[in-house]
Length: 482
Ligand SMILES: [Zn+2]
Image 1: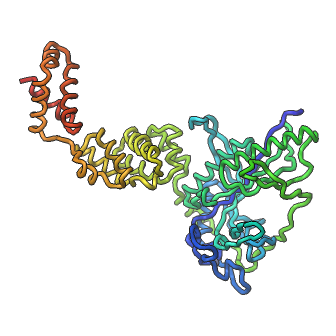
Image 2: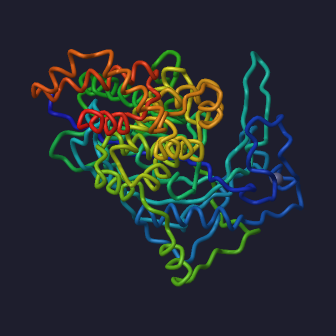
């Protein structure tokens, strides 16, 4: 058996986060809404209606294209892609065929080890990015099929990669980086649970050293990173077995589906010839024409790329895993950035946000949206910094904030957690501690500095942790010096 290498390419569909649909003014946020309530005659394909392209969607597709270092095709247009399916009311999809909005880009991504540290840098070519509208959703119940057209007309970006990926691990790492980039560009929310990002993965094998691409197996409609990884692993194993048996690659392209519950692929189509979608330029929408000046203006205003953001985090002292944790959870990132902005202290910010906040959220089984927001975190930090509570008490307050949903000042007030910073009150406590620990005082006077720790500890215990330790130390030294 010759040594074989695995060739993988992806087609990624990402829903664009626009207010309205791709070609009509229907609400684009159908999540949780009753079936068939965010529809109109345009997205239902009624005769006589005309589609009008969504400028916001075009701008978002362009931002994503530029972030992927693609060339924007200043002249591009929509095409009709014909096929019959019950979730496609028009009988064709409005897509882009030979003149997509963008082509020839690259995305750099990193491979991580199990602990989240970088082990290799990789690059994957982007063949093209084009815009199209999504289809509706079918739900099969026994012998009945239910149609919900709320999703019909949702703006999609389809991003097609070069066959540059060599393993399921690389495919997943690439897809995760692409998701980060689309979110950073505010082009897609890319929420996997809501099906906003879906993958078709093509996989084939070839002998190491050869350049020819063999017929491929295309796995349709994978909607999680786990499914992408498992489906590719399964199909790779299956193709290697088949190569072993048949002495070579697949005789022609095939299309398979992934059965999530059974963790295996099933044959959908055995393609001898390419599908004939009868592409034709969309006659109801004029070609899109941009000037280089318009493209340059969008390029100049692009938000920071995830790779740049990551570099920024590692420069202030976070490790790769911490940086990615923030980039992958935008709500947590907002809090961290606000805390760092206030404290200018990366170590303290990471201890407050990544260790304490995240730790308490996890132990109380809550997610970031259910915990304190950045404003509440900043109030808590203010209370520590102005001496109202000690840093240690701050930890307790934070946990109580997460459990109760109350803010820091309410909890400090209700629980009487204010730190005691009043000099005369502390002096009384320190004097009492000196009187109660004659042995420690004797040791200190004999030259043992450490003996003072026992006195400070005594005061902290008596005050239930509320005495300000800095003031306790100061007064203790004053009293002993007299
Ligand atoms: Zn509509």
